[in-house]
Image 1 (cartoon, rainbow, N blue to C red):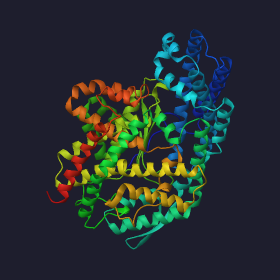
Image 2: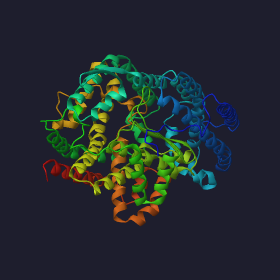
Image 3: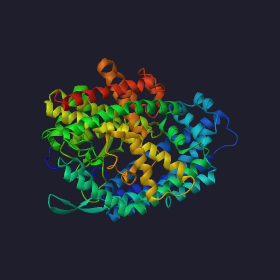
Image 4: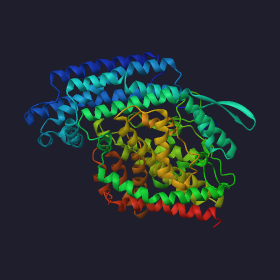
Length: 597
């Protein structure tokens, strides 16, 4: 494997965005989209005031479902291919133009999706499932379509909303992504003035030197402040549109609509949040122990990601790749071979660079093939993130044989495989670690858990408050910062210095500018993944026999149903408390190590 950080290889799909092969498939996609629109018109795929005879409806469904699934698969690959260029360099004007061109076609496809959902939801779903094999294979989608159809505007309004999204929320979201990926700030580091991109600036939070972290934090806040007005405009526009459409579609709130998308109910969310609030004192214990290791009275915001211990092991990218391959093999050869394939076929874009999106993600490309973006740091956290995203790719592998509609995995279940793979790597690294390495590994793990539980709750509280207040009027930059500070005080408590919080975290987190409540599913995913890992340890062979099947069905049943197959009752705090117990054990161990035990 190469010792320098690799870039992902998209040439196996098309030679380039301007290649004849890409143009050919794009034209083919548009023609197929025209044909599918014609088929939908001919078959009268719209919300029906009176359901069709179930036998007739079964015939219609079996006629339209195959081309609909096939066209969405084609759209997915085209979109992922174009997005791969934009996400690593938002300054690529040609790629941005191609993305804009493709987005217009995606709106047409989105309208067909809405029409099909409205039609299916207005049929006699149970009778349809009895009569049609295609319906039985898509029974879960059909039953969800019945609920979704009840929360749709008129066909004309839904079509108009889809068209206007291009100049509304989608445009604001794209604006946010382009603007923030190009923000630069000047910071003085060790006597030298440097101009850094935002992703590079935020990476200073991992520096062992507290003055470097502080300088990066202060420069970051100053940069967000300078760009806060247009970012606040984007947030107000997106949340305002969501409130409007939520109300027009008959949902009680954006949260209730999000719960439906997440395939959980309010009882499940409340049980999880109750257990999370009970865990906050334990996370504050962790933050106090970290402060002791850092030799400070209390952690500031810029200390959250600080490394602890003496010279924690640096994990070079190729070393991390080999470790992941070897440790995945302790679970199964299939998982190990899959990881090796991902590295050898260059699925991963690893180096930070100007114009590249911050953070990490995995996206399905085609069939069983994915692409992973990361801004790799040579530390355990960088390796852990890599294993996490490979878990998403493994999930995509298990979903590969399902149809497009069967693959619609909610965010709550989308984190299942990633948390599981991340846990394999953490436990393996801990086994052979000395005291200092244990501190570093546990710290990286608890740092992540603290983000996914404590910080996620703060983001949830912030977004909930913003939606409620945005219903009355737009919110100013000052108000957004106040809401964010209040949410951080409620969750971090005395674990952090309240005079050194991050009031602009609403500007730093891209999730606010996409789907509503893109936050609590991460906590769900962490705890559900930890619960599954505990089951694996109890009965490895029995678990392996069921795990891949579970991953392949995450778009074919809701979260409580799938969890029940593993003996979990998600609507009671007991399950969530049990998952938190594993985190508490790590906190106890970390606290003892911090005290020299």
